[in-house]
Image 1 (cartoon, rainbow, N blue to C red):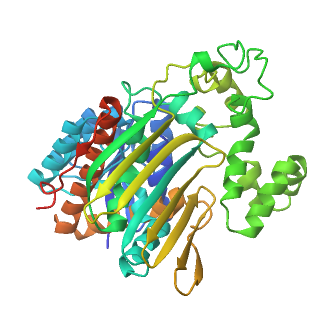
Image 2: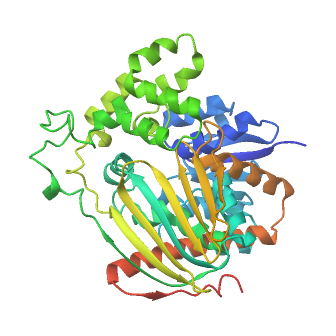
Image 3: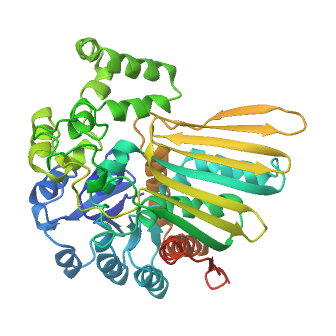
Length: 466
């Protein structure tokens, strides 16, 4: 069977580093035949990696879409606010589309995407990668099995680490709601997608509160310069220092180690944080250690496409990621709570905040016969299930193999997308998944409206799943 032929629109971090490597690992299943990317360096690098001829390298998606259809699939990983037009063009052209989340930054555009998919009978897959993790699927399996009894209350938390908050939502692309989208959409459309999916029921009303409390000029501990490298008097003690986050990388590795379930990897990282010179020396003889000592993945790849120490420091000196967190043009919240009532009476709270010590999602599900507690971080994940009467406690390791992004969700998403495109057609389960993705996005928009207007919003799902 021939591989699925795909075009990539947007060869940035998610497109080229999260999804495209599937074609390199499984060339018999997926082949990239064209790329559209305005950045010449990214475009050339992607073309070289995937052996794409020069005539199929385009500066814009418009140029690509003017060309006769080149394959069966289009993967769209542009910036959030640039999703709608290329996705609609690809659907009309005949491509099945894999679209990075959030699917769009305005509710009417989200609806339009699903409508175009249905009108053209082309598959639309949204990159809600949490659905594809072993962790979320195991939680759903446990809840649906009935072992917890009737589900009474859920406390789900998106604990964004302090350094990730500074990276993405203070200094980075999602810092300003007018330029991108509300943080509850950019960060939590994943969570608003999996909660109804895990519980098997729909929310009927919600309220929300939250604000930007800390990352403001008036909260600077002392008078600070515009950039961390410009003689900041508190650089050595500031947790958000760009030098600390991107050069030393200690917050990243600490967060990884705290959610890592592999004792060997956990020990290696702990030792690296204590004695980096020793581990760098040992990496000469044990190449596997270079995954830590010569790490060049996210978030460094956001600063520079070739994250050598010299280029990372240069980016801090002149780029947006070297700015003081108290002197940025950010306006998105740094904490928000969404309270929901579900149709079977279950109460659910989603807490998102950007001041967590470590990066992780945590879930507590309380039922009439037991409880589930889960943790998923960038180092791994686990679930514990405790039964009320017997007091039995079961531990389940849900960690993915080392190196698989988003808890293993990235690669599983690609596997299922490729398989769906191979099977072709426009099956009912794909249609429903797109509508569920739309519903999760509309929940995020409703949460932001509830927060801003301080009101309770009634939610209807009948129009989506009649």
